[in-house]
Image (tube, rainbow, N blue to C red; front, side, top):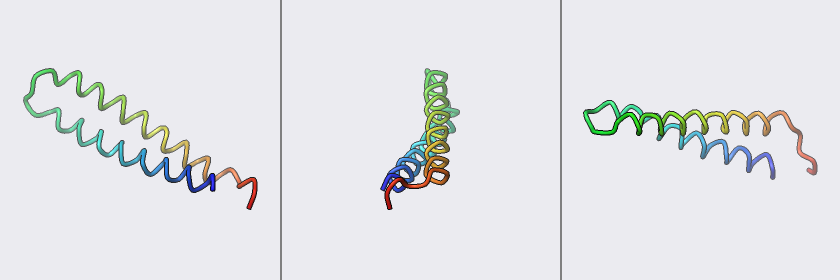
Length: 67
């Protein structure tokens, strides 16, 4: 069960990272205070990609304790 919950966390994290990528690209339109939004979306994207990679790694590499 732990494997599936880690994969679910990884999938949700990837969805958030795609949203932050879209938001980052959308900040290149002419708006005020775009640098703050770019910084927020960059930090959010890097964090969620890191979480997703870590959860996938743990789900694949660590065997389940109880079958």
